[in-house]
Length: 314
Image 1 (cartoon, one colour):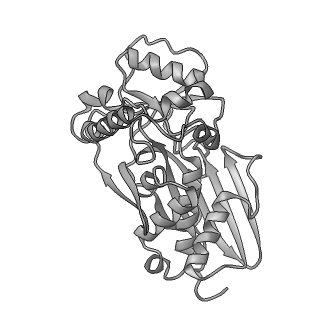
Image 2 (cartoon, one colour; image 1 turned 90 degrees about the horizontal axis):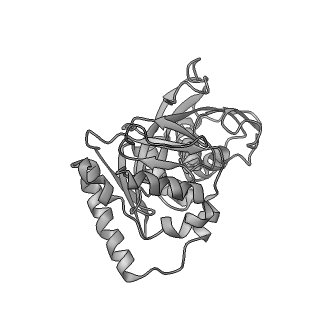
């Protein structure tokens, strides 16, 4: 084995995320207490990927897998491509539901590659890891909370993506309404117009600023703070059930938004007792993940290999 690679496996735990949070399009995100666990090791040749849980039997088991593609991109930056890789994925984040499954895969791949290079953290620090993951993903709103944890504000500069993580106020209790149907980010983005009215942009900018205050200081303001005029109405025809649930929850006084590109719905305050939901949604009450992605040495343990161990569903 080349001397610039570390011996033995490394593992990483990455959280699900919800981006946009209503008015914070492509900028705001929240890390959630539902995790994928992955492990990787440098081998003498070939790529082998095993997937348990979400995406098992669907995702590729070779270089086409997004985790491996992210690892290869990181190895390019680190200047050290291994001959082979063995990757194990225990996935709990639903695929294509607006919960950051692709960002989790990208963050996991970059951090695994960095940990497999002897001086990886020096050569690819946290700021550089954020820039790389955002470049691979195309925008930083999901990779930022996945990396940093908590509530994040992300933006892009000529040198790449940047982000900060802020503590979330007591009283913010995320509830997810997760459908069986899947969505595609590309389709959701295709539904957006090239321009929006100036008044809508101004209103949404003000609510995004208010949302920072509501999430960090005063959750009583979450309902008005989550008003959006930039993307949700334009995407509504592509996911009518999601739009109908958001509207019903908001009419009941709940700060509900589309999670990322959908179709999952995120409520930042709890629905009232007796709220009629229907049968097409799973309800998951999740804590906020304040730590972000975590890397350690060694293989996945028994609990980490349990496909449901790191998720708190209700």
